[in-house]
Image (cartoon, rainbow, N blue to C red; front, top):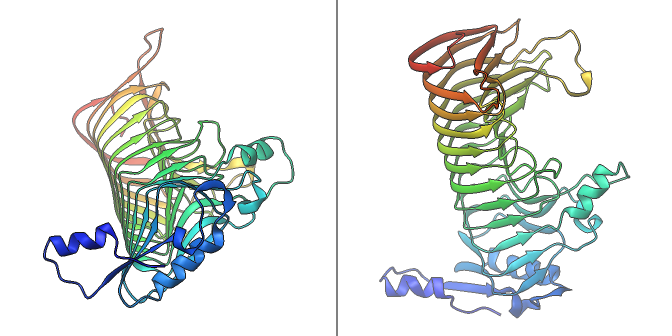
Length: 389
């Protein structure tokens, strides 16, 4: 049930000496790539064997379509482990099969993990229809989740039609997401592309995200994060928040979004906090070298987020400070191309605008404008629309 894999043989040809390198092929454990046979148990057996291996293990999913229900891929493992997908993983058509599990594919407490290639398809259409129809629906599953994982590479994965979030990262560190493709219809509810929370040292690079909610959302207790060369849209943009939902909440710091393109998204780059008391914060944030193509609210700080009017006559306790927007250019589908709607009790401070050029994509040729409320900072270079800071 195990054999030396091609990737393991590569070490030999490169004259890199490792004690032993073994691949655990899910087919050898009983999986069938016919798209109909339930292969969940085979995947779990392959994972367990690899995780307990004292050699360099590789879980291998060859070409084919594999039907799997919830996969809890638990660590810690004895060695660094590779999970290579050359085929396609599909969820059952009945959305309840994974919808009550919160996660479809979960890596838990795995350190030194490389996940490569392949496609996962959660077949979320039935679940979305249930949500939109107001029926009694399960909570819905994230397609792939990394929880309490360290030193992770996720590369080359395609995620289709998640029930909810496509890729989740929580309580993890040193995670790199590279060259992933995420796709769901623009009307699919709560299908964030990548959601990060309670994590540090996260890089998202060279990826295309087309979905029904935030392309990338960053929750509380996230720090030291780089997002670069991302194509976003359709979707709701890249969002820090929502923050401040609870009174005692860790903040967000040292986030950079760079060299990315937004196309017909509901928002561009956004900082969002609830209009209620909180000890949270968002600071040391950099948004630079961004292109907006007919984007609503290209630059947006919203500290009055309050869906369903559950926080009337309150103000956000989240402190937003030291935020730079540099070389952001393109077209806005809203006349307010820059909007800084900050908290009256905790005004935004240290907002810096540098070389901004955003025009309103309007048939009547009305000019774009900037809106400021309780926002303090500075501007440099050419800023259009005219800065209100």
